[in-house]
Amino acid sequence: MYKIAVIPGDGTGPEVIREGLKVLEAVSQKYKFKYETKIFDFGGERYLKTGKTLEDKDIEELKKYSAIYLGAIGHLKVKPGILETGLLLKLRFSLDQYINLRPIKLYNADFCPLKDKKPEDVDFVVVRENSEGLYKGMGEFKDKGTRDEIAIQISYNTRKGVERCIRYAFDYCRKRNIKKKLTLCGKTNVLTFAWDLWERTFNEIAKEYPDITTDYAHVDATTMWFVKNPEWFDVIVTDNMFGDIITDLGAMIQGGMGIAAGGNINPQGVSMFEPIGGSAPKYTGKNVINPLAAICALGMLLENLGEVKAGEAVEEAVIKVVNKELKSLAAGKMGYSTTEVGDLVVKSL
Image (cartoon, rainbow, N blue to C red; front, top):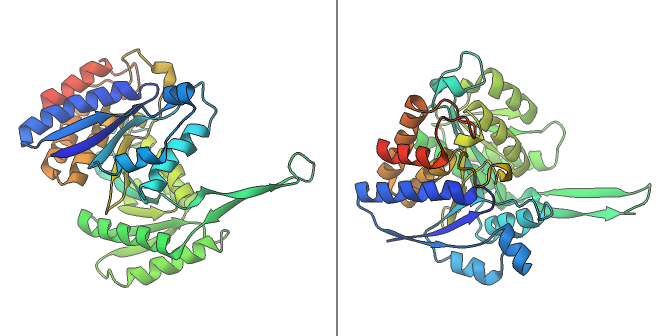
């Protein structure tokens, strides 16, 4: 019996989660596993009513679950940074979800903005460190409000944090067993302290994985090659900030935010899975948002729980729908409503 904590969140989050849960019910019947869900109201509306984002007792309750299924966080009436820091980052840090896993896979060449690229050309994974770096929130102002003001933002990297992320990436690359190539993406020529640590650790750990080919690319070159030669990549490992940036570019070359899913992973604890596109408030309640990213996130969640065949079946059903049914992956242009797309995936199962 899997216990799944469901956080529908803000904006269109509840709409895409609804379709994901519809698919979960169907796939559980097909593959004969049992689960139970509990809905949590964390998000903008709760904050506006109570002034609270996420309390310590909430974290303790979530630790009792097998996984977390998140819709989206982001509310127009809540100042930017409050929900992101008090909810999303607190979840990741408190549950030690130190890996952000982003598969970047093209399902239909018609939806790729790159010329002459096929599904076999866009199929790689970004392993992003998810608990340190610039997102640690460390820094200070000096002489704030004056003409001499200085804003200091610290990129905080520990040997332990860097090593466990890189080791996860090597293990994942070996398990993925496609090109068995791991690329370190960084900025060693400018960020000489943090990336000296990353590069030294990467090279040391690489000696333990002689079956894995390794290389290095500056982050700016990586963005260029995502567009020019995405087929070069297999697995990429990088820090929190660079990972945040390059995975959004990755989402675009795989067809857009409507298909992009990710996982916040604690390999020894509770992991959280979500569509990466945000709450899209302008589409709220219109039944036009694309739920496939949330459904793909559900597939990742199932694989993480050990229901690998069920997770793969969800992805295969999504691929069928993307290739046979949809006119576009963009909200309002799919040719179907949000609800109808969810129904199509269930039918394809």
